[in-house]
Length: 330
Image 1 (tube, one colour):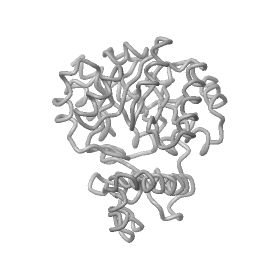
Image 2: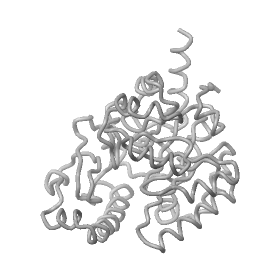
Image 3: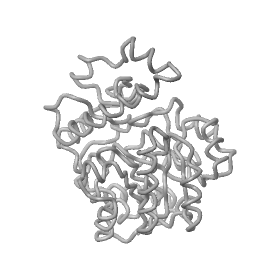
Image 4: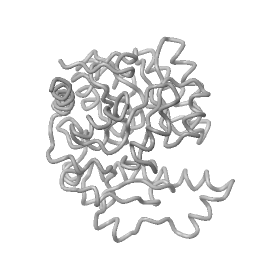
């Protein structure tokens, strides 16, 4: 197996600096295991695992372990939307630690309690950021590295190019992971060439044999081009990257006047975001598992430009790694 040594691979104990990012609802156990078995690292998304793929978290982790004993990661969204949610996430993190998970990706809040738990057992925590102010806050809370979400990402994309974001954060002294726009080996090599210690990929792994997403979703990714990716406010109240479909064109991409006012209100914005979140979770689940007939939306990033076929996840990891090896030896 090709091994590409970076500060990230050395810290996490993997061979290829490639993360299969946590995706709701697409992070099924088989996909996570396939990426890890091939030398990268798959990330568990607990809400997807439990409520979409119907595995209790401990059971789901053990199902992955039946396929591979290589390192896997866990996604902890630490936004304090409610006490019930926070208590559940704390419990899920405990289960993951008990089952031997040692790499955690945090997002959308203060990761300090995750850092404390994970560091206590020798684990590593990286945090999602889109700009320097969030990176500095995350580092103040003790994270070990940063997932740098750029403007080419699917889901909640950032606003800056991979190059600009790297230049903004490269002096912070921690490993940086490029997240967004990587769908082919050339983009992978490009990110490592910029100086990133690894990449995080989502969209490319939806169009795989192991992913449980509906064939319509996979076909939409294969057929889409970068210019087909648009940002919509109607999923969570903040811009989310999706494939432009007839449904998206018909319904538009901008939140209504009342919704915008509520999202800016200091007290009401949390309720409005909760409404958007509950609705979008249901819509995403229907669209990704039931197909285009449900008319909702397919999240995807501009990496669709480099995706031309549905493939085994392990073959993607191996091809990306081989491209770097071939480049190094030429």
